[in-house]
Amino acid sequence: MAKKASSTAGKATVSARIPVAVFGAGGRMGIKNMGMILHQNDMDLMGAIERPEHALFGQDAGAISGHNPMGVLLSDSLEQALRGAKVMVDFSSPKVTLSHLG
Image (tube, rainbow, N blue to C red; front, side):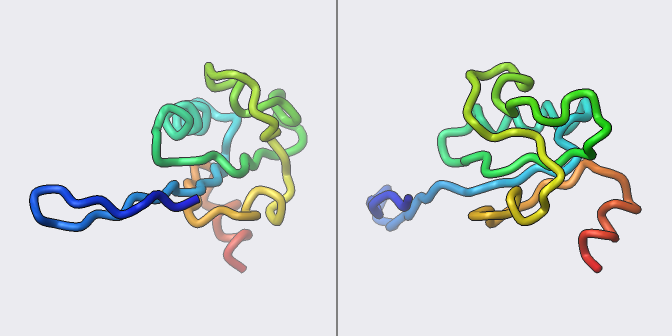
């Protein structure tokens, strides 16, 4: 959902919300990244990927990152996590990253 352009010191600026997905969402850095994304006024957490055997799999991304539950669950569905996302933050393993690219 884009915001209106505004003029600041004679320069037009456009701000829009950035839809983000996090891979490796259940790890220490994944949780920190989700918390920081949820803290930003210009970002939306669209998806969170984690392997099914992870202890936090299926948990709410907002709740595990210190925010209110938001309905985004840690999932292993690449399609679901990327739906609507324009940015992917990957804190998984190199092997997993390469498997997503191929």
